[in-house]
Length: 188
Image (cartoon, rainbow, N blue to C red; front, side):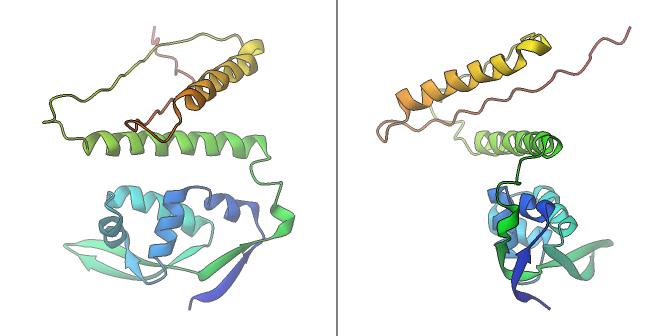
């Protein structure tokens, strides 16, 4: 049974709602649906929706209310546990305050950003005579004692671009920058 209001007292529950895509999935689950149904409503892949539903289930914001078998595959039917969610005042200020949590959220955000870029690119009209775009990739080596300085420089450079070109006139471009540790590729 769905509650009218759920008070979020645990940090993990509040953090599960950080992603706008997850909030949209949660809204769609006000009524029982499968991940495939929600994906169709949102124009996303069932796998992407399942990823968000799984996180919402872990945070006890969504529950599996039923299951059905479709073409030999068991498909869960999920529903939100409440119609609205209230954040406990004692959590304000603690959200994102833990180093481990920040790292996980950053990685999760990076994965969501990559999916968003793929979706945006797939939706472009490739028959258009001109698609003004640029892709840049490179490797930068930063000593651990200069890591903070590097990230501040990167943030400052991007902020400058956003301020100079962030007006309301002209063509809209999406800028996505991903910076992540490069895995060890040497297998000697």
